[in-house]
Each structure stands twice: as C-alpha cells, then as structure tokens.
Amino acid sequence: MEYINLKAQYEKMKSEIDARVLMCMNNADFIMGDAVSRFEKNLAEYVGVKYAVGCGNGTDALQLVYMAYGIGEGDAVFCPAMTFIASVEPACLLGATPVFCEIDMETYNIVSDSLERQIKKVKEEGKLNARAIVAVDFLGNPANYKELCEIAQRHGLLLIEDAAQSIGASYCGKMCGSFGDIATTSFFPSKPLGCYGDGGAVLTNNEEVARKIESLRIHGKGKNKYDNIYIGVNSRLDTIQAEILDVKIKYLRREIENRQKIAQKYNEALEKYVKVPYVEKDSISAYAQYVILLEDNNKRNELKKYLEDKNIPTIIYYPNPLHCLPVFEGINVYHEELGNSELYGNINLGLPFSPYLSENEQDYVIREIVNFFEGEK
Ligand SMILES: *Cc1c(COP(=O)(O)O)cnc(C)c1O
Image 1 (tube, rainbow, N blue to C red):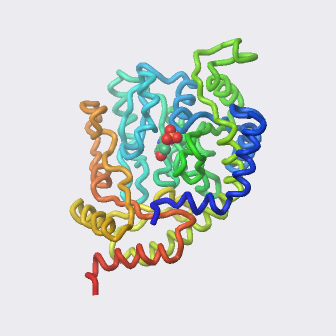
Image 2 (image 1 turned 120 degrees about the vertical axis):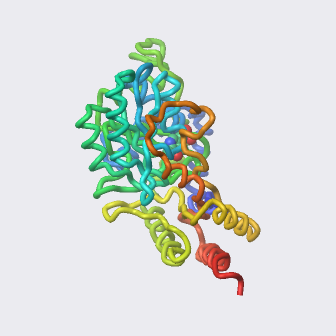
Image 3 (image 1 turned 60 degrees about the vertical axis):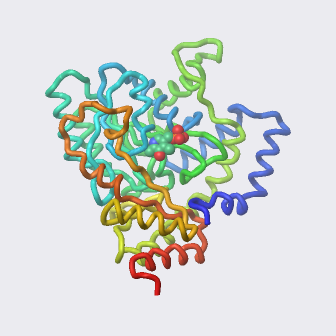
C-alpha cells in the first residue's frame, strides 16, 4: 500500500499527460511559454483570484512574496509554531525574525488569541517592526480567516496565506489560495495539486504585486530579461510541469469530493479510538494529509510500529514545532505557551490517504487500527 497513491492517479490520466509531455519535447518547449500562462489562467480561475504567477516551488513562492513586499532585516513575521519550516524560512533568509504562535487543538491552525498576544509583545518591546502574518491551512484545513483578516487589518499587518497544503479546500464558500493580501502554493508531487517535480505559484488580486513577482521570478526583468529593474531570482515553472498541472487541475474537484468520502469513512470508523480531524462547519478540507491524534507519545509510536508490521505506511506530520528545531534554538518566543504545538508533534500520525485509496485499502487500514485497540480476535 502507498501512503499517497500517485501511481493510481497517473494511470487514470496517463494518455493525456503523456501526450502533453511528449508535445513539449517535440516542440523543444521547456521554460515558461504558452503552457505556463494557460495553466496560470486556469489556476487563477479555479481559486477565484485575478492573478496566478507560477514559480519554481512553494518555498520560492513565499520568498517572492516576502521580496515583493520588501520584508527583511528588523521585521517580525508571525506564523503558527506547527507548520513546515518553509512557511517562514524565506523570510528568515531575507533577515526577518519569525515569531511563533500557538495552534488550536481542534483544527491545528493558528490561535487568534496567541497571535494577538505575540503582536502586542513585539509592538511593546519595540525592537522589531511587526510586518506580516503567515496563515497556514495546515494539512489542507482552512485557517480562521474571519478572525485573521480582522487582526491583520486592525494591526496594519500584511496577511499571507500559505496554501501549499490546501488547493481545493474552501472556507465560507471561498477557495483557499484567495485569502489575505496574497497567497502561495506548492505543486510538490504529494500536495493536493502536485506536478512531477518541483513547482509553485503566487495567487493574488493585486495587479501591481503580481507584475512585480512576474519580474522578480526572472531576475527582476524589466521590458525583457536583459533590462533588469530589481534584484530578483531565477524561479520559473517548467513548461512540462505546467502541462501536467493543466491536465491534473481538471480532475481536482472530483478528487476533493473523493477525499471527503474517504475521510468520512475513516472518521466514522476511527473516532471511537483516536482523535480524528476536525473541520469547521463552513470549511471543506483538502485533506492533504489525514492525521489522527493518539492519547500520548507511546501509544502513537506503538501504533506506528504496529501498522508498519502490517505493511501500512504512516508519516508523522510534523514531529517538531518550529521553536524546537535546532536552527531556531534560543529564539525569543516571548514566553508564549506553545504546549499545543509540542503536544501535537508528539501524538500525531498520518494514515495512508489519497483520492485513489481503494475501498479494500481503506477497510484494511481501519481493520488493523481497530485490531490494535481491541486486540486481534
Ligand atoms: C510543502 C510546503 C511548502 C513548501 O513547498 P515546496 O514546493 O516544497 O517548496 C511551504 N509551506 C507548507 C505549509 C508546505 O506544506
């Protein structure tokens, strides 16, 4: 059994994808070009924003955003303590300071009260300039944008949505990737919309920023590549990846529906034994991962080992909150309690999940988890 069955997905789309990829090679069409602008248009339409700008990966997408807004030395960027380091790493690379906030034990997303406390502490201390909030739709579950937009506005902060895990998800009827001032996503193969290598995009309604990012991704180009107006980077979306994504995006709605059905089945069968994912009434999760929580670290590790012995792959998403990573050792966390983030890291377990997880596989995973708790009969 695969943790995420990308082979089954490819089987379903093989003839279309093969034809598109071969066409790129026959036309010697590899960097940017029509395929990229065509996919950008389709992605923007899917998400419901005016502009999508493709780039090399989801980390670069965030870096391009931080660069476009001139975030760097002396700036504070607020983010949830439990996320992938890439949410805030490019801001650190540019000289900014990350400020970690607590997560909620239901949605595993950033807690507004903790965010407010951290913003106040940074402002009171006066050493750093409070600049931006990076909200993450963790595991594909939308963050609380009603509260986050209000907080960002009240404190005059930029709100960035890291939608790397949430393309296809929605919140109050609006698609993820359309929240805040600007959003980013990743097309890493295992994400809800993945390509066959690295890829990413920036999503926004702001034309001026979209144009600046189009320049920054190609060495800060002006009228052309050799008329440079900014210090930029080289971060483009490959033509082949754009063609693959352009095929895959047509199947995304159906895939998100399948994800709901499979999650529902897991939920009903497992909620007696473990904490299953919680999704707000007005949200639809993309279930980038289907993650359960166990009662403690021992139980988590025991179940992981038990399932491994039954050939059921599992992954911990993620084992460590950012403030516990060696690279951030000694960073000022403003004495905010980040106990939920630490607890989550100790007790979470991702189960095999994808829109192509067969009924047999679903039943097998469920049966073995039930056996673990009830004892094999
Ligand atoms: C995957 C991911 C990224 C980075 O995307 P890459 O394409 O791997 O660079 C950023 N943020 C989050 C939350 C992610 O899951």
